[in-house]
Amino acid sequence: MVSTTDIRKVSILGKDSIHCGFHLVPYIVRTVLDTIPSSTYVIFTDTNVGNLHLAAFESEFDAAIAATTTGRKPRFISYVVPPGETSKSRECKAEIEDFLLLNKCTRDTVILAVGGGVIGDLIGFVAATFMRGVRFVQVPTTLLAMVDSSVGGKTAIDTPHGKNLIGAFWQPEYIFIDAAFLETLPAREFCNGMAEVIKTAAIWNEKEFSDLESRSSEIFAAIQTPSKNFSGRVQATRSAAQELLLSVISGSISVKSHIVTVDERETGLRNLVNFGHTIGHAIEAVLTPTILHGECVSIGMILEGEVARSLGILTQVAVGRLTRCLKAYNLPVSITDPRIANLPAARSLTVDRLLDIMKVDKKNSGTQKKIVLLSRIGATYEEKASIVEDTVIAKVLSEAVKVIPGVPSKSPIRMATPGSKSISNRALLLAALGKGTCRLKNLLHSDDTQVMMNALIELNVRIPRF
Image 1 (cartoon, rainbow, N blue to C red):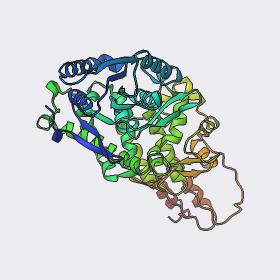
Image 2 (cartoon, rainbow, N blue to C red):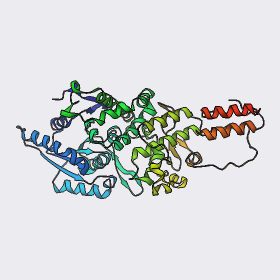
Image 3 (tube, rainbow, N blue to C red):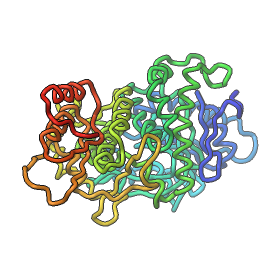
Image 4 (tube, one colour):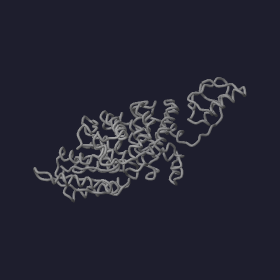
């Protein structure tokens, strides 16, 4: 039997409604039946998750309802949708609403969304609009949904014009985080979720980011060995790897919960959780469904880090740390990654195409695009997304730039060199050949740049100041 000491609870909007643990299905069913009374409980899931976990929920609900001795017994029904992002549509939402109406579900119906982000977003939106709003519960089964989409009350469906453009804020009664579900999750999907975990640490907590940098193998170990006989359900049977995984998940959720509590409707601070998403969503719009959300956000984080670096806000060292951390979880960090570059759709990742997609972004102010800018690992430049000119974004997105010789109209000229050994070497050479005093900042320090400096000294060429 799970006790309150075996559950990690996270507060959001003044309620301890996020419950984290292992093998929680009996606990979920008992908690829902005891604290959210209803005439009808409906579980929605997809075929992938349903094949793995629906039977356990059905068994627990049936047993608990059969044991009810007071009052009228509630009923339990379920509905399974096809897997994948295509289900998160107007058409699928209408089919679900027709199912609820056909089964004479009323305003006291309680809906449980058991699945990944697609199920959570879709069913949450159904709950927000059916009968002008019914109670619902989030039971995320992927890491991405656990640390991101299930927390905060955002619900939505997709349209041909973009992701999550039609939806509502509708807070769940509970969010149950059962980390044992991750043991059946494909490794790629787990890494997909780790992108959001890394993002949260990058904007908020350098200590947690450092742990993610150094403990990737331990974190992977927690899901690679299935926990037999419900191991981890209670603290006494929980392994060190399970404790670490639960700590990573609950820690990431705690940050987002705090941000949501301060700014539920995303008027400022909540923008921060969109680090990597402005560019990442544009990439995702072109590459979905082949490339996953977290993979696109991973690339978006590096590109938005480069935007901050080009503006002189973030150092190359920070961009390097972010790159290495994402790579440790097998995430792509560039559109030149073979997993992306070899796709036919990758040809559409042009600068103009990405900038055009980025025009439709909820953070934007009119035609002005907004990006969350890191100032260092664990902190952002502003406590909201910052306005960034298209020319700055375009330069970062471009594969190459054309350098036209001429006389500068302003003096002195200040520029940040890109994070590349070859370009750093070129900057050194150009500075050495230039007239007057040249001061270089933010060079990528490496053995190669040191060799270049030594060569310039041996050639008796003037060395630029740093």
